[in-house]
Length: 60
Image (cartoon, rainbow, N blue to C red; front, side, top):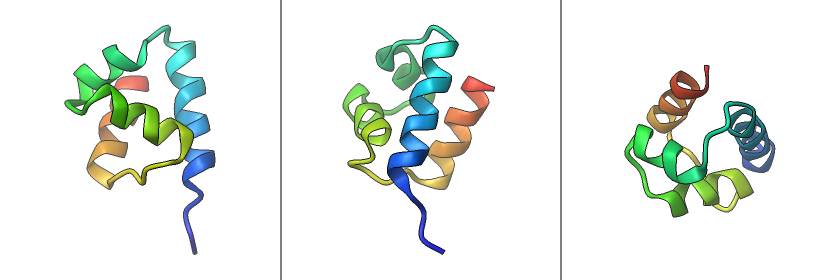
């Protein structure tokens, strides 16, 4: 089964906006660059399991 990183990124973006967080704030909380958060949200970059767990913990 192949992961669709564009769909995952869209869901992360929607959850981030609902929490009223900027990409910069989210990136600080999960210890990655704001550019990496942007790439994850657009599906241009894959996301590691550790980063995905960190994002899930921050966004609930």
